[in-house]
Every structure is written in C-alpha cells, then in structure tokens.
Image (tube, rainbow, N blue to C red; front, side, top):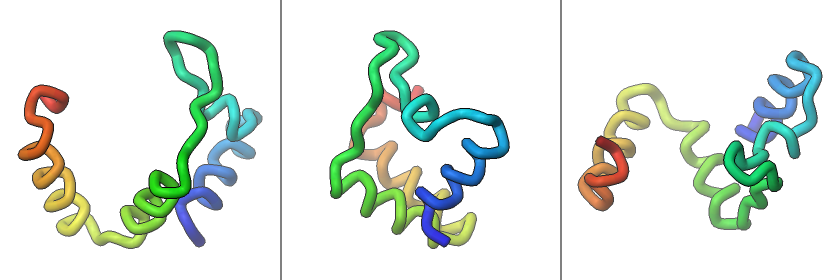
Length: 68
C-alpha cells in the first residue's frame, strides 16, 4: 500500500476528503502535489524508522532554518 492509499484510508476514517486533508490552513486552498512530491512520499513510506530519521536529518542540513 503506498502513502496515498494510507492517507485515503485515514481520510475515510475521519470522514474527510483527500482534498480537505491537503488543504492549506492559511489560504483554505487545496494543495496540489506534483508528480515529484508524490514520488518522494511513496519512497518515504517505504523507509524504516531509522532510514526516515536519516532522511529528515539530511533535509535539516539543507534547510536548517526551516526545522527550528
């Protein structure tokens, strides 16, 4: 099951649509994912916890100010 399938199941459980799940809180507009973003989410969904933490640590080295 890929990450979008999992998100779909969560949305079903909470009685919301996937559009509502991805809605921007500030603007109320739907957030559209690019094909690259979807691919990245699918890769991230396959990582074990240690690999996921390593990925997050790597991303923090690229954009340290975003992860304060």
